[in-house]
Length: 422
Image 1: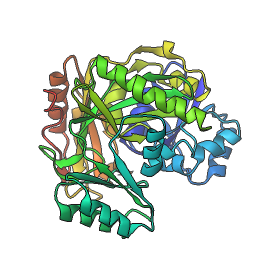
Image 2: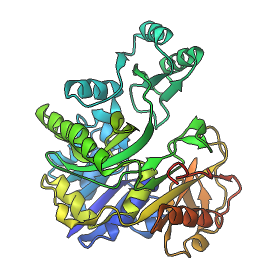
Image 3: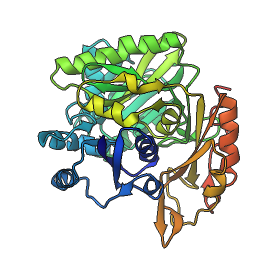
């Protein structure tokens, strides 16, 4: 039986907490720091996750058998390495392996070395502003400009006009996200989709594919966000596409990382561009995505605790998976008006119980906090209203019906989640 510490506080972690605590092999679940929704599933603890020694001591004091790391920042800071050094099993990659996400330049260079299909690119370091600007001045349009380091899902600009490309380079070199360089890529045509693989360093299993909606407004208009909704499984990822991704992307990454001395253990998130039968990697993340996880975990029928533990211990056990595609799920993000820019916080939320009166609906907490038993908004993405259905259309209808039952003053959401698939 597993005694599990889950690291994180968002909608992704709420979905993971719900799946972990429902697992036959889960004896006890803690979450650090968690949120009011996660508190319904786990014991939330006050723990500075940047203090690796404090996390280690907590694990030893409570006989934790597995640590599941949700967000990218603790992985970038080497929390998995620190815990493994104390013989604590971790579902999540090492700091070295996490470079697949933490450095776009590393990721592109790695894909070139290991023949993983991706867009042509040029890489420019922190001191190469002049060269980067000259490159976008000459590049065919559209052109994609990516900040090299972590940028909370907001460090990508697809420029269709020359001045947009130049402004993007200027903005990134002004230190808006940090002091890393940029990657300039050719534009890929097609539809984006996400594929998650659970990896143990040698082997992997693929979960239901998903599509998310990055732009803030209907019809993919407005600014890039962390994600405004998602659904799974995504029909565009056919069986043939899944086989191609498994063979030409995931297998090459797993083998390449092992060959380079940094075996990948955890969730490999493959952000893909699909154009007919042609598949290219847009980006890798080294953890579950948000809001895709809320949909993907909803259609997964498995002992998730046993699955993650087996991956963490280097012996992936796929027998604990009963189905990766149990119907369809749609997750609609309820956000705060103004997101991804400035928005108001501390607004009372009502109607979640009414929304969850539908047994097919789960409301995942993302940006919430509780004060004197009153639930308040505390983030740009507040809730993820997720519904199951026998068909995608049914899941979408249930999700939007549940959204209508939830109220807070600055509530807004997209009205076209999954429309492209329907």
